[in-house]
Image 1 (tube, rainbow, N blue to C red):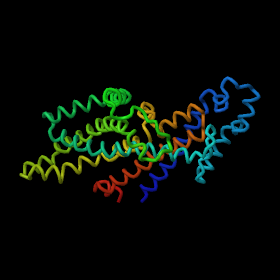
Image 2 (spheres, rainbow, N blue to C red):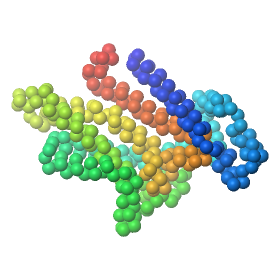
Image 3 (cartoon, one colour):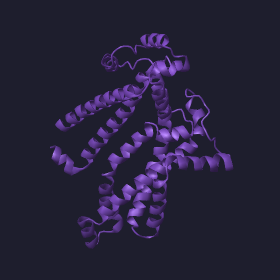
Image 4 (cartoon, rainbow, N blue to C red):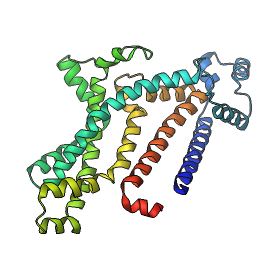
Length: 315
């Protein structure tokens, strides 16, 4: 119980530090929302008037504490650039990113586990060589290259899927489905390539361990050794990293969303930073950081429950 409490407190502290760092970072950027909004029409008088209207003339510390107090009450404030509730904007874009990320996760995670297990059990043989080579290729390719290749192949050469997303951000989920095919494939390639290498390494480590080799020498059938002893121990260390990839997917992948013009939370983040829309930037970062913290905490607790050694340490 003490470990859980300590982790919860550390998670809250992490979110506070992240919000503070982002607030200060955006404040250090040249210009502000008033300058970006007025553009060439900016004059000292108009800038002063707009800054007073938006509350940008107040001290930085005061604005941060005001925002933090509202967040603790469940109020994320109003977008300065869009004049809409931040909670509505973030919730809508988060829904779109979750659709994209969770679809890729449902396809990619099982595929990464299966391919990683096959490669690990067939170490240095033909299946392992093929799987490892292809995964290395996709690990080294930048995401925008994979995405561009998919657009060239399946949207231009063979116009099967749309190249970019054209539906509005608030469209029903069903209208997004034809538009997520290529982004999902691009994300799946990246996720599978990274995760199967990790699973392969863990499987090899467990299969070459002393207790597995002893079981094989005692005549225990290989299938039983693999299923009952090797795989559970090999997959335990992968849970944490898999959770981080799920958070990475669910929080919106900026490059993929930009290439496919997908209206997710990553795209909204870029727009908010460009507009110097501080309440919106803060809310998005808080949501993304919270996703990572919650998933990381949850997987730590899950590993602790599944691993007898950690349970004994906790006791």
